[in-house]
Picture 1: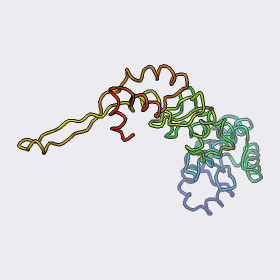
Picture 2: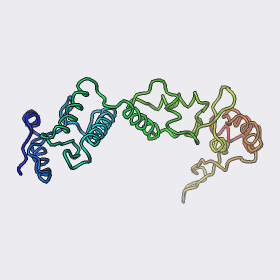
Picture 3: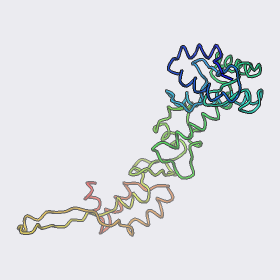
Length: 277
């Protein structure tokens, strides 16, 4: 049997002429259903789509995916599994001569003309998952033991697609975390004090003494030797008592403390002043 377009679908194809090929392909694919007339579920903007297509914002995509999944659930509940009187091809097609399928399609269209969501709970769950993924997918590294859901709970009135790294940093600060001044590691500082907090590795890096060597080019005079600057090994022995003691108790080392300790050691004077402290 040759399927034809239902009047409302034909009108939509006339309105969106660039979709004619797609509509014609759907007709051909559904020939096996032996439907006399084919219709596609509509929303306020045209065909109800599955959320896998291009959308202006992620929020629109999540809303489309939620509505599509809900509409499919309604069809399955009222019309049975896919392939009988309805089909899922990225759009929901149905037999335009089946009263149950027509009723579900009209229910979907009617609901969406009065409100943008078919199922608020489903949409909220999808939006929550998407916002957690947005936080965890940002360039900002979260502290150990903290996930996107933990951060999301600390954000006031978050909106999908509008969560910035500054907002995440503020949330982490509210949870008691402080970023290392030299890297992306998060520290749990036990007491509020001014200064630049450092993680253990960055504190050791701060203690590297400046070393110089004279490099003489072949055939050059001694006075033409070039001075090469570099950094030696961290002064681990000097810093360990501080790092294992006060810094461990406070949750962070501090640049000011490291420089003061290194400056007072015999090996460390140039580690500080070589860094223009």
